Length: 426
Image (tube, rainbow, N blue to C red):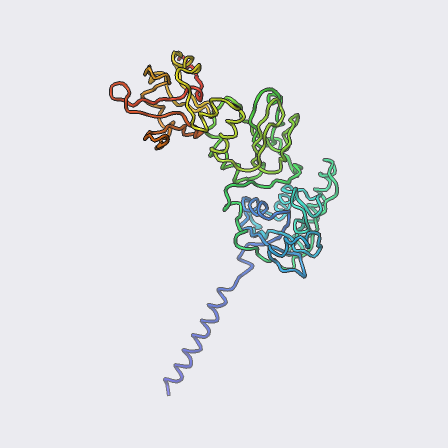
């Protein structure tokens, strides 16, 4: 019969097509153009983030490797009894990269530069075998490259006064991805810092791109704001610059430095985290804090530093009110042409051209500088009022009422939280 023969041929063709389609879906190393290497350099959060920022790196995954006799999970490896266990798993990062875009030599150089490989079983305050420095290779090419780069970096470290590198290079046995909450941890946790344990020793210094030596002489006199910045990518540094530094125009200078540019300064706060905000007076640290600060936190700290225990501080942060016809009011009520600015941020708030004498004993204006203030309901003391705060710093300025001249508002503002800047003549 013709039908059975046709049916058999059709089945064979379908089976052949199925096998061919299945083969097409299998990984093809010749066309994938990707490779992986696993490294450990202390806490895996910062290592993961730094490698993800390198062009040519497709993915970086936090995980565990190079252990035995212990469960490969965070709860197990962080137990105190395993702190000095040589068989403990290491916190590592699996780096998937395109060799056509970034070489394994470049990745290993970056690896050595981003931590201190001379520290044994630790990085900074993180101590234990889980934080050991290690390179776990996938092939002989990677192993050879790692050894060559290690030898070259040892020479640079020795010249800089550092000891022997403790990094172990061995083939990878198995990589275990870390728990989901550890992946992209720094990106998911905006209130923190990027650990920076690097030695500052670099493989290459292009003279056209070399960072100039910082002159800290101006910081040795008076009050200054010092921000420890990152030489590599740091999401919290970027966020601090966008949220705080970009809008700051205050009269206490703000300076950005790398941890390697702090000569002549007397500091107490460790500088391995970025950003670190330090308040200086005559070159000596008055206060320091590691990690990102939002505008509210920053200006509260700056208020203590600049204003101390004063009426201005009470007005700015405790919503107090100047006394009527206070000394600062008497000074400011007849200034020449100019602008009143936020005493902390330096942002323009009110113009003398909008000032009028209300007879109230407080500075009065018909309007603020466009976009400079925010309004908030204030129902304190049994009254219904509208509070005025500075948009940049968030400090309390006063209140706005509807009894100004010619039907305009009256912005009733405390003089002690303002500074005056004369208008520049054309």
